[in-house]
Amino acid sequence: MHPVATIVRPFRRRSARRGQSVVEFAMVVPLLMIMVLAIADFGRLYASAVAIESAAREAADHGSFDASYWLPANVADTVASMELRACTAAMGSHLAGYQGASDGSTCTNPSFQCSLEWGGSSVACADYVGSVAGMDCTNVVDKTLDTCTVHVRLDYEFRTILAFGPLGVAFDIGRDSRYRVADLTAPTP
Image (tube, rainbow, N blue to C red; front, side, top):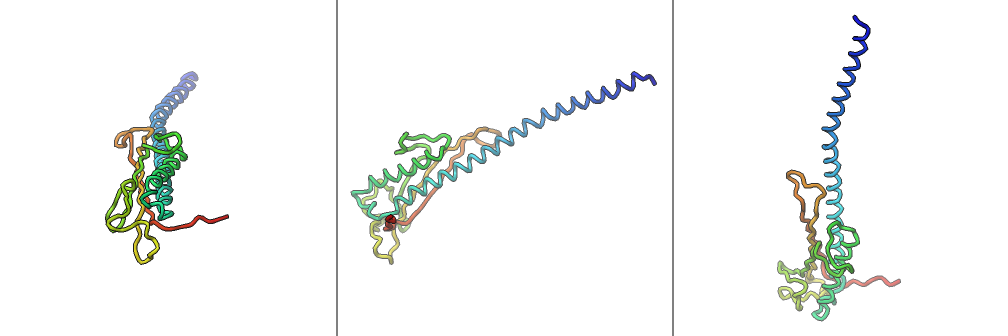
């Protein structure tokens, strides 16, 4: 054998292997990037769902704290205060796509809905005029009666980073929170 031929052959094999590695790398990297983006989107989706749930709880908890909030003269202020708490909590959690007033007084993404419920009946909070199916929601003294329940629902449109195949561009996240109306007192320092 010629000594030059033995030197050239291994060189050709190495360059062919290098080319194969580059092709494999070029095929795998896009798949890995898609997986990383999908994982990031899932994390964002989960964090958004937790933030929306927390905001709904904040509003429902406030509305159920004191039965006098539901006296007809106080209803408008109570509903505005509940929406303020829900929107401020949502805004404070830095939701991507949050839409609302800069002071948190109202919001459209997430959207706020509130109702008072009792005995299978429901009345929108803003329309409450003293009773739900004959039940006075301010009557919490008689412990033998069930009291009304404050129901808050927040709906949030989550937009993905990556729209791929069966995955959509947006998901609707809806969270409900319900608390019974009670007469609680804040602790004094």
